[in-house]
Amino acid sequence: KEKVEITKEQRALIKAILDAYNRHQIPQDVTKKLLQEQYSAEENFLLLTEVATSQVQVLVEFTKNIPGFLSLDREDQIALLKGSAVEAMFLRSAQVLSKKMPSGHIEVLEERIRKSGMSEEFMTPMFNFYKSIGELHMTQEEQAILTTITILTPDRPYVKSHEAVERLQETMLEVLRKLCVLQHPQEPQYFARLLGRLTELRTLHHYHAEMLTSWKTNDHKFTPLLCEIWDVQ
Ligand SMILES: Cc1cccc(C)c1Nc1c(-c2c(F)cccc2F)nc2cccc(C)n12
Image (cartoon, rainbow, N blue to C red):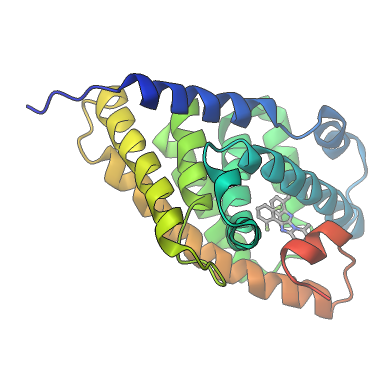
């Protein structure tokens, strides 16, 4: 039986990432609006756009606190953010939807998503993903480290220093592997299951790009930040 031990440095890493993950949350006024405003498709889309924009802001702040991220080449930092944003946002919204909010709020948010003019073919895989994340019952640390691993994916478009990003990601993967062994001793495959979610995220990334195009075609308005992060004109 392998004796797994988290080193002092790894514990500091987990603490830094968890603090950043918890410090940067979507402002209450944005989530409160989700409960107040009326239910037209336009209103729902407008609200989800506001939530998406604030999720990008939260993501940028969180990413800046990932140890080692700011030492990467500046252009690579941008390439990693643009390449991982929607995947990190899927993880964040999955965690919000699967437990964080009081029960009544989840149905409301789900209802707004269903009635936001999004195509059915995108809806099913998205809600399946939310369900599969909820079933994992990840701890806060696991959620924060898994999001960090997603952000530090070396093979995003336009990343130049592939090795530098890979080194950072490998450090995080080792920390997550140990956390899974220690926190889910009865589930030896738990770490593999978490990594399997990252594969599912890539598929959703693809669907999301198509959804952006179809929203754009139907003349939906985005905020400047969403246009910038996803290169939408
Ligand atoms: C906030 C939200 C929560 C759940 C589902 C959806 C559709 C949204 N909203 C958007 C998302 C998005 C996201 F923010 C997180 C997860 C998956 C996503 F599709 N992406 C975009 C891009 C342009 C406009 C919006 C409204 N939008």
